[in-house]
Amino acid sequence: LQRELYQNVCELIELHNQTDRVFVTAFLEEYVKGFQRVCPGVAVTGSVVRATQMYIASRFFMEPGITPLYEGLAVPFRILTERLQRWVIVDERFVEAAHGRNLRMFGWTTLVGETEEQKQVQLMFDVGVDGVVSSRIDISLKERGLLNESAFSLISDEIVRSVPTSAACNETARTNLATSSGCTYLGL
Image (cartoon, rainbow, N blue to C red; front, side):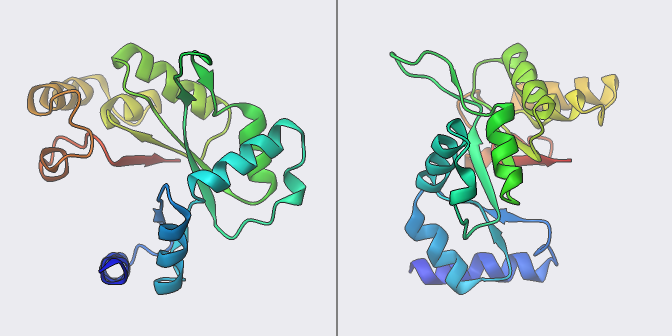
């Protein structure tokens, strides 16, 4: 069943000639490796284990010791825990370490409201990420200067009206054209 899913995703990417524009990401190592076996021509991001290894190595400037078998990393902007309140993950040092190993760095925003989302998007681009995964693509586009004010208002209103805040990556978000909410990538 898993192999069939990998094959279907691979065929879809190839059908639309997107092999040089898509990164497939998964939290678990077994899924990343499984997809790589079935579809070696499509870039993948390291699993959460690989991202954690690179992050820890970056803290000690030891990333040259890591030989990545993937093309990028996809990590949250920050982690919220009781003990490590607002622990920022995507910082200049981590991005520098990833780029030094020829990896693309993608950060995703945490759902905390429009104002905070704008700050996170801007901070991630300021430290050099290659792309942002956002539940509010309209905010991300506006931050990059790729969306004028009237288009921003129109799209934002439609997103707010059509998708509940907690609906990231649900079926509604994937099928509603104006609602690029959840599962949406903005690259440079």
